[in-house]
Image 1 (cartoon, rainbow, N blue to C red):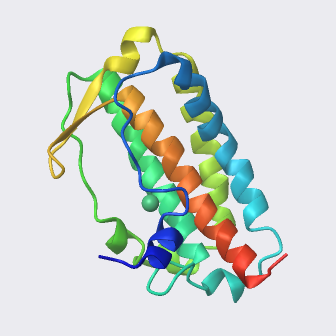
Image 2 (cartoon, protein in one colour):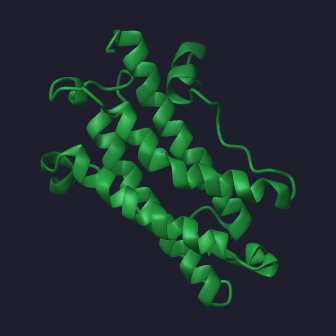
Amino acid sequence: MIADNEEQLAYPIGRYEVPEKHMPEMQQDWIDAIEALPTWLDHIIENLDAQQLEVPYRTGGWNTRQVIHHIADSHMNGYIRMKLALTEDKPVIKPYDEKRWTMLKDVEVEPVNVSITLIHALHKRWGTLLRNLEPADWERTYYHPEDDRTSHIWMSADTYAWHGRHHFEQIRSLRERMGWN
Ligand code: NI
């Protein structure tokens, strides 16, 4: 059990909840959120210096550098999961250890701008992919073996739209608390 305050810091927009059913009217919101994220990230790191990028957004949490590189790691996996689901019959996707991924050297030495540039390119393609899906495509699925969970493309789009906002808000609220303008 974590304290309310810690919960609020870790999940500033709340924990992820899967919608009960597919609402096609939400598709545009998911696509908009995915297409907007790179620009939000441009703004949220603006004027942060090297030391500020190393400050964890909460005690024991990732710092801004790690959060940004994590978004790139996560969303590359997400994009590939969707492409697999669109081209194969109920593929089993490959889980990965997100914490250990952030401990590899590239996350340590590359500037955050490198991952933001990557996210710009990736999300451009992701938006184009989603924009051009047929209604039946949104119902295609992949299977996550560790979570024992089947995800439809629409659930996955909802999840990654949430995920971008979730990490963006961790950094935004850190900036606000620290008074970094
Ligand atoms: Ni994450």
